[in-house]
Image 1 (cartoon, rainbow, N blue to C red):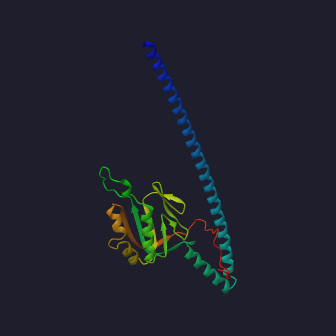
Image 2: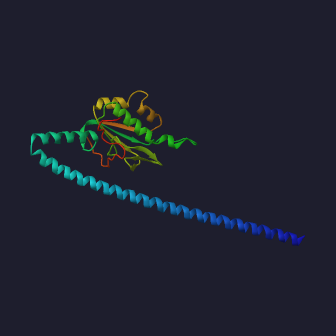
Image 3: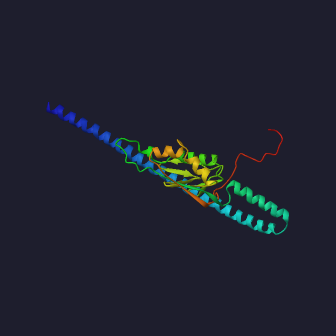
Length: 239
């Protein structure tokens, strides 16, 4: 009886030893994969940031050359001055130049409501769709230039949620978010304050929204890189 008892104990100890050893190897391998993945992501991030810095440098160099050309061309003839005026206009429309004018400044921050036990905290935080709704209302109300945290919104701008941050023009931000819009201040503010509109919806969730009018708002130019890989100028011919 005693012999079989000790044999059983020994068997259990061997099984436990194998299980512990296997678990240890799994944890070790998992940690190794996590570190490797983190190193890969860090390397990719550094590469993207390096490429972005190089592209921004190219933009600065090209803008400097364009400025030199514009200054010299403007002195040569009335025709070149007209071309320069057209270039300035299209740069302004494309969001590639700083603009100023009357409008509103909207500051949005996460809610400060005391949460009840079990409440969904994310419902009281600002999401990308909240900023998109505000931007859409402002555009529909005739806003001529819009920025969020000084990131100029252009045709290729993206606003998307990444974890607890919001990515705007590939730059991550946390609250508060400051939206600047140039246009008729009365019309812009009225669009946001429509009964049952975006401001009412955000207020119901405790999101803090402040609207300030100003006669002189500066909306900075888009400082990213505008490139088209597939779209090309239409030259006529077959559709």
